Length: 151
Image (tube, rainbow, N blue to C red; front, side, top):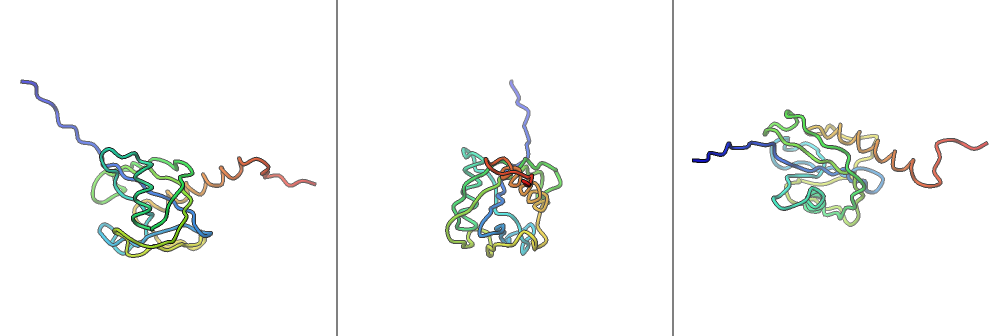
C-alpha cells in the first residue's frame, strides 16, 4: 500500500497598494478578522488563478476600480501576520482607474492621502512602506529624471 503524507501549506493571498487620485485606496473590512478596520484591498487566490489575476479581481470586487499592476512589492510570509492562520501574501503596487465604489466584503472604500493613513489591519503598514519605496525607485529610473539639481 502506497501511503502519501498529507502536505499542509500556508494559504495564498494577494494585496494591492492602489495609487489613485493622489492617495492610496483603503477599504474598511466588513468581516473578521479586523472587521471595521482599514486594510488594503485583497484576498485569497483561487485555484487555477495567477496572483496577478487575483490582485486585479480582488481590487475590482472590493473597490470597483480597474488596476494596472506596476510591480511586485514583495512576499509577506510571517506566520503570525493573519490571526486565522499562516497566510502568505503577494503584494502589488498598482494604479487605479474608474469610479471608486465599495463591494464584496468591504464596508466602504476611500482614498487616503499618504500623510494621513489610519491604523491598518494585518501588516499592511509595512506593505505600504515597501510599496512607496518601490514607487519612488521606479520614478527615479524614468528617463529624464534626476535627483541632482543642475547649476
